[in-house]
Length: 250
Image 1 (cartoon, helix red, strand yellow):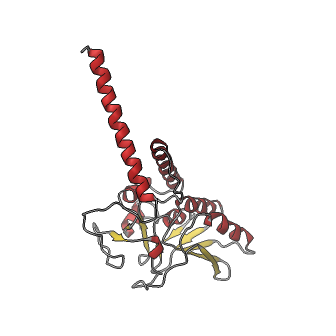
Image 2: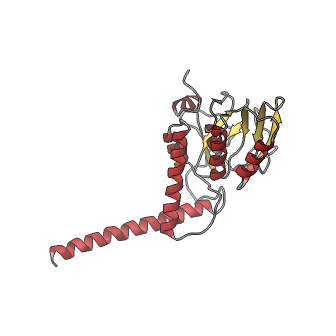
Image 3: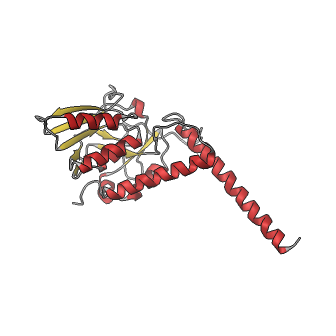
């Protein structure tokens, strides 16, 4: 066998390995995205319940957006709304935005905000997350309108909700509130060819990182999201919220 033939054989094996890897990655990614919260079977110990105290190095908890409790200490069992609900408060100076982020919510909520007689200067968030694309669109609108984002004691902002939170020109997060991230759900379940699927997911992840950078958030916060399955949530500690730029350093 000539050196050229050996080189072609080596290149062929490398390309085949890359093909197998990308096919496998696409299958795994879509298995996790076909249903919000679905994950591959695992023999690893289950994460503690969401109500268990958070400690440094022990910040991953079991979680599903469709089973997220309403706020409180400890959290009650009554669920949050299935879609985002906007309620003007404080004589219209603020607006409470709570519930799951469903596909199409961004356009609907923006329309409501634009139709208010008094534009609120602050958005109060309480959401278990949901559609990433809608969260990004809402975050951009909030930043362009120079609104603040805030949370109340005991409120939650999980999954895609932190992207709305990041949109605030000023952000306020009390230490009793809870902000968490995990792997993305973009709100689309269309089965695509493997290479197209991987390319699409990578492109969207890049858009999220660009968005965070524009909002003044360190994109390295994504390291926690990318390794946390959809049925778990990584809770950001106050020092991490400061380090990644969600709230100012003391």
